Image (cartoon, rainbow, N blue to C red; front, side, top):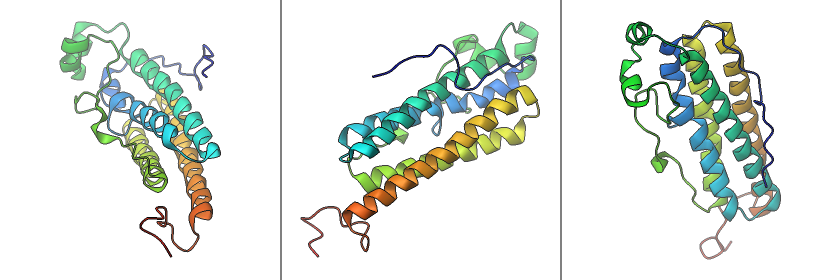
Length: 199
């Protein structure tokens, strides 16, 4: 199913390490609204999606999110490469360093490790698509917040790209919700279960 092209979806070329930036950008790797959560959410939901074209959208976006995970990992790696102990201490990166050195570990900016509690795969078309749209908006806001904190153009450039993809994904999931609405009942978006919605 997957074909791996050995290059990033968008180039990441950060010249100046900055562990203080890495500390909060890491949240898009393993935070509650990050790329790992998005990928697992969409690739899990696709199995119970009843409409083939919507299953294809979930597969495509879930796969693309894996590419975004790779980009965030690369950003964090480039921001933390070749650090001295003094740089680690001065940047406030020592708590992360003690546990993980400069390896990439899925955690939020707060240090909370990634877990699946914050994602859902409900098997209900509307519930899943609405969750997906909300997830894309939360990820976009997180990228907005990162951009408020970052002035290095080498870091901002790929973050802006990732932010734009969240907007596109939100639009695609909105289109999926419209397709669902058209198939179920234009007047009653929630008339999905004939046992409960007879009229």
